[in-house]
Amino acid sequence: MSITSQEELLGMQQISNAVAETLKQMREHAAPGMTTKELDDFGGKLLNAMGAKSAPRLTYDFPGWTCISVNNEVAHGIPAENKVLKEGDLINIDVSAELNGFWADNGGSFILGEDINQLQPLVDASKQILKKAIAQIKGGVKIAEIGRLIETEAKKSGYKVIKNLAGHGVGRSLHEEPHEILNCYDRYNTGRFKKNSVVAIETFIATNSTYADQQEDGWTLIGNKGGFVAQHEHTIVVTDGQPMILTSVNGIWS
Image (cartoon, rainbow, N blue to C red; front, side):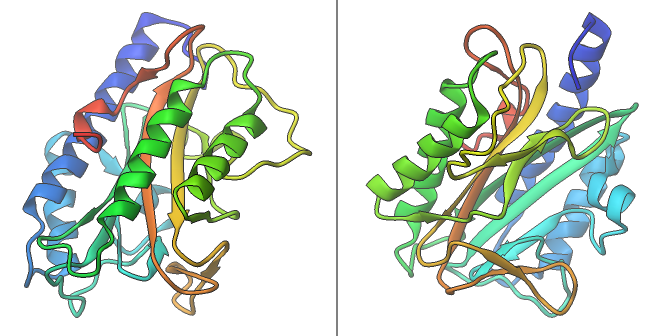
């Protein structure tokens, strides 16, 4: 969507705060011994208390309030009663929702407790690359160049990117134009970021894989060459200068 009024900006700020606060509290609530379903139910209660509706549930009938992916799962992990969190797990939580006709999306990966598998550098790289990418976005910038930046920065850090997952427009629905804000350079994408548009920018930084394959459950994505993937995501408003980060209260950079 494109922000055309103060009312629209306020609507986007409200839903963005709701998903960001939910993500932050879920991250703080996660503990070894907890199931991903328990963590998801906690997030669902937070969204409901704010009057927000789970976007994956609303849009795709997803079997959870949020997506929770653990260790080798790249994205769209289904919360489950038999999936128990452990010390050192790499956890990704993706929270998107709707409120009063406005939609926002955010996500983040983190290590639960002690970094047993030495994956904190991967998580940190994902955070810093997202920060660098967002800092370069303004009206008129080529979408493909942001993909190039993300891929280049990942390589510098010794990592790869997942090439078939992307950021996207958001605002009046969960996925809008532009649909392909990739983590790699696409020479065929001639689109540019437009001032006042709302987009969800996300990184998918990987140790081994370059593509995510859907599993038999119809949702969970696993890397084509195994390993681990860290994802971080903010919903932003594109401006003539530095973007307005609507989901900043999620604290993924703190």
